[in-house]
Image 1: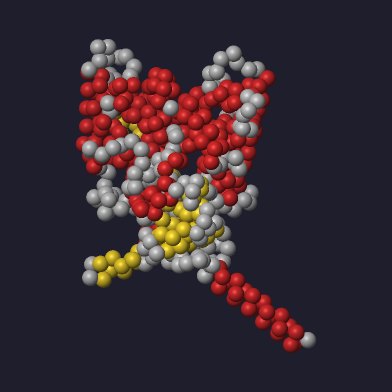
Image 2: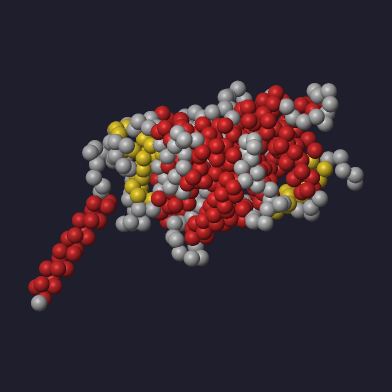
Length: 486
């Protein structure tokens, strides 16, 4: 009996040891980048999601790029700019190398394809635009450009300006305003109106409430147990999708004579005989657009307000640029024109510097379609690759004093599109199609703000990254009109 038990135990030990060896030493037809695969199954997930208050390169990445030890004032690399790890049970190559990042974006559809962890797919939907490839992705991209392209944005300027003025006026009547929540509501209401003609004042259902629950658990540890942030996130998505589906069905039953919003456009596409669009893809697209258009922009605007509060010289130059626009008009109170918007040179420098330091997107994921050799290392087929924008945006070799807020560093630099050293809006063929919409919202809001209002920071403004950007205590200000009677 004892020998049999001993043999079984020995076999188990051998199998477990072999499995552990395979986990820590994955198969590769070449040389894997250096790094650690962490704990079996768990990998280094806990460290990746650990909260930090730094505006610098995330500690998870920084500690793996180099050692903390100094010798003769020389910083010795630990793993270097490309390293391997494991996140949520998946082997991942992390890239902070500008050349590899550029190569990845340029080889979309050839050597790499868009990929996100299964937890993200559960959150955004299996048919979300980020998970689709080839012709289907290009088809959806063109649909979105129909809404967020330059011609549509020109027509949207008055609506964005009106919304900015209405909300700023409302906030000025309050003793204190929390900017993250307030800007999020402003942008969501505007975007939802444009996308699905959703009017929060007339609707009995609170669509944004479900998105708030969704956002809180978006970048959290993926544990789907009641009470966890991730579980609440999935529940928020489920309720939001149910509301969107109900709205779509209502629109089907009561069609409109003329196309007035994005829902109408989606319905027209669904009714075409040769369409490749399905209802589930259309709803997932609507969900992603509603999320992306308000959450990321509100974070950027809140940080922008904080930067303006902390840097009076920046506020002075920004104000002068916008007051000059008004002075050049024949009618000072006339609305912003497209030419005026395009003339906001310093504003675009300010926006670029804000999103460079915001690093709202901590990682951009792709998957290798075949074994790829790069700088002496091999990225195995099927492995995920995470491009790390913060490591690029905060690289002292590319940006002098990278943690300093300095919009003037963009003087003479193209502030449109992406480059090897700037990827706040992605890169390659998947460069964010909503970039211009984001810039329009930010620029017009800033125009209304600095020309008509003054403010004082009251409390909050601290940031936490988990790894996405958050304002745990908000950013509270007191806002008042410049020409208000004292």
